[in-house]
Length: 562
Ligand code: PHE
Image: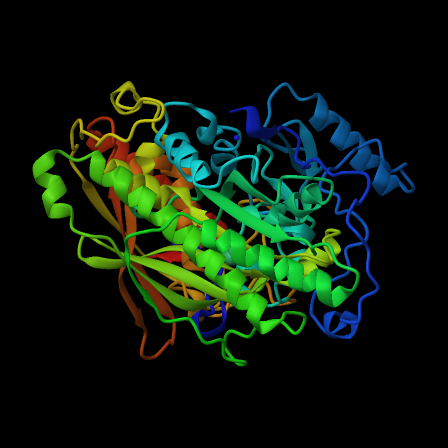
C-alpha cells in the first residue's frame, strides 16, 4: 500500500457534504477558541516544523507579480499564453515549457517531471461519480464518521505546494517521498499531491471557527510514480480523517485540561462496540520508536489513542460486514470472522503512530495508517489548545476487496461492461466480462554509468541516465533538494511504458540483472506484459508500442539497448 512510512521502513457529506471546488479549504477569518498563555512553548520550539503563521499559498496567479526583469516578462507572457489555451492539462513547449492544469498556468523548470499521460488523468474525479466503486467506498467510509461531528471535504485540484505536501508536515529534507523518482513535480514549488495530508493544515484551520464540528474527512486523487502491476496505478484515491478536542471549561488550565480528558473518556465510552478479534502490538509507547509528545499528558494521550483505535475498528468492521453481505450465502460461510492487528508505525506528522492490518483471504494486509497529530501542526492551524488524531487510507485497496476487482486499471475504465455493473450505495461483486490474451515482450539494456543532468519534461535529448546502483527501486534516490542529479530508477522505465502504452500494460517486472565482469557495466532486462482489459491487442500494435518504448528509453535515458 502507499503509506508514507519511514524509520525502520525507510523507503521508502449530503446536507453535510462540503465539497470544495477550489484548492483552498474554507478558512475562517477569526479564531473563536479561548487563548491561554502556554507553558509548553519550549518543547514545541524544538520540533522540526516550520512556523506557519502565514497561510500557505498554492495558486499561481500570473497577474500577481509585476514583471521586474526581461526574464520575468517572458515568463508572464508565457503564463498568459497558457491561461488562454483552449485545453487544460496539455504540456506546451515553446521558448519555455509549461501547462495549464485545471485552469491554472504553471511554468516548468528542471524539477518538472509530469507527463501528458499523467496530466490526462487529472480532473476525472472518480470519487464524485455516484455509481463508481470509488464513490460507493468513499460514502461507506464517510458514513462511519457522520456529520455534524465530521465535515466531509473533497479537493478537486491536485496541484499543491511542496510546502503543504511535505514541509508543513515535518517531512525531513531527505525523505524518499520527496524524490523526483517517486513524486510528480509540476515545478520546483508545485507538485501533484502525493497524499491527502497535503490539506491537513487547511482542514484543521477550518475547524477553528466550528461550533459542533470537531473533525473532518478529505477525499481526493493522489499521485505517485510507482511500479506497474495489478494493484498499482500512478493515480489513486485517499481518504483522510481527523478529530480534535479543544480545552473544556475551567477556571484554570489544569481544570480545563481535566474537563477535556473527561470529555474524551465520555466519547470513548459512547463509541459503537465492535465484535472483532483484535491483536494490539502497540500499547506501550517507546521513547525511541513511537514516542508520545512532550505536550501530552500520558493519561489523556491513552484515551485519545483508544478513541482512534476504536473508531477505526468500527470502520474496518463496517467494511468487512459490507463485503460479507455482498457475497452469496455459501461464500458468506467461508468468509470467516474478521481478524485485525495494530502495529507500530512512523509518520512524520503523527506520534505515536500505528498501522492496521487485517487478515483477508489468508494473508495479513496493511490497510491504513494513523496516529496522534503532531502538536505543532495543530498549533500552526490555530488549534493550539486541542489534541487530536488522524488517519489515512487508500480507497482502491478497500474498493478492490469490497467489489472483488482484480486489476486496478479497471477503476479507470470507461467501458460500460465495467461501469454498468454498479449502483449508488450498493456493494456488488464484480463479474469479469472477459480476459484477453497477454503478450509478453522483453527489453534489455546497459545502463549508462555516468550521471547526467536532470531533464526537463519532454526534452528527449537531455538525459536522466545515471548510476546503475539506483536501478531496482530501493536504492538511494536523489531528492530535488540534493545537488546530485536524478539517477536512472526503475520508476523511470515505468513512466516511459505508461507514456507509450498507458493502460494497455498489465505489469512490468525486472527479470534479469547482471554486472559485466570486465567493463563493470550493469545490464537490466524488464518483461512487459501487454494486455488490454477491453480487447485483444494485435501483434503489430504491440510491436509498435514496444519499439516506441525502446526508442524512448534510448533517447531519454541514454541506455544502450541489447
Ligand atoms: N498520509 C499518509 C500516507 O499517505 C497516511 C496517514 C494520514 C497517516 C494521516 C497518518 C495520519 O501514507
